[in-house]
Image 1: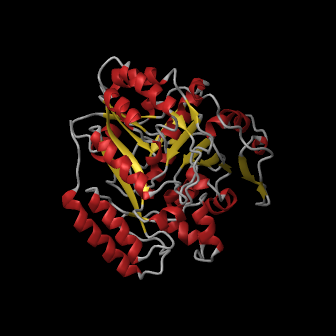
Image 2: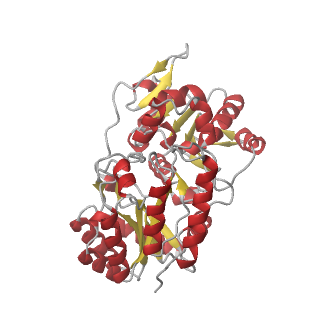
Image 3: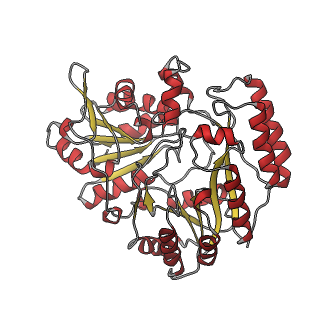
Amino acid sequence: MNSYDVVLINAKFCSDGERSSFPMGMLYLGSILISEGYKVVLLDYNLRQKPLSEIEKDIQRINSPIFAISSLSNGYSFVKGIVPIIRKNAPNSKILLGGAITFGIPEFILQKTGADVVIEGEAESCIVPLVKTILAGGEFWNVPGVYSTTERNEIRRPRQRQSVIQDLSALPFPAWQLIDANEYINRLQHALHSEHMKSFPIFASRGCPYTCRFCSPTLGKKFRVRTRDVAQEIELAIAQYCIDDVWFTDEEFALSRARAMELCQIMRGISRPLTFTCSMRVDRVSPEILREMKEAGCRRILYGVESGSPEILKAMNKGFTACQASEAILETRRQGIEAYVNFMFGYPGETEDTIRQTSDFMKKHNLYSGFGFTTPLPGTKLFEDTLSAGKIQDLDSYLESLGASWTTNLVINLTSIPTQRLFELKRRIQEETFPTRIVLKN
């Protein structure tokens, strides 16, 4: 039996065979714990998916006082299945739960999953004091941002919220050695259409100040950046994994012109030429910024346009217009960069006319999208509105249903369009737009 101070568990949240990215949150936690001298292992059940019977065998081979699970909302069913297994085979251990699964509904998640602790917010700021307190037999509910239950199964709310991590450069680099990094790199080749390139994820900032109604502020609304150690992390990834492409996983690459120029300067200073992919808002685009990005190696920009309908864009609170989106796409291509655009299907208020507007927008710009169906996720304004309107009758069942792929399954129909008709419209648009998709390659 192997003994560890902390067992980290990356929950299964996508179907086997789907593309998945590095479990960055878990890797940051692992790195922090290792730097404090703790012995840590990471069980990655999203990459190496197993039936619960096999997972139970894994748990039986491990001795640890702490099991810390991280999950997205669509890992809810998995978490409900693994917690009883840990409880059965490690009855004296504490089970911690964090990640997007807790957003907006931490008390509900705590009660339904049976975890001992739910962590709200950036767990890096509380994981060490929480682990120290548990190992010392102390009252861990005093730790900021921690929800727990009493012996009478009553909820103990945190006495204070966690402080937001201001200096991201103070965090150690992710503990890549805890996962099969090369397998993730191989998956990213397909997910990012990087062909022969070896892409690698880098967080250069956290937070998004915008308030799109369908989006949860995964890393908070306060925009924070790291600069002095970004180049160092990229150089380390080059040395360890021979990467030649960077995927900036930031929610927003160029919140300001100065920040975009700063990152471009970093990329130009790397020891070997690299290309990179990033995400931007269409209203942050300018010819000057795009020229700098192209010269620094940018090959693709992901734009979350979501709809070609002015009415739906306004309902989403996107904060930009379809005209701005059009100009951003055209200017991106003029600079020799691929514009990869995401769209959403079935937002509240969607009609066949607004869907037609989106289809026309895509055809005008030769775009293709997998079209994920609009799904209200906990922690979003859309979820709150859907819940208040009584459209989610059983929250537990609803969360269970989130495990399905949103590009092929409709979890909840938020429109007045019959469900079967929605599928027909989605299929038709995909068939009409797929042959004309433009991909720029160097």
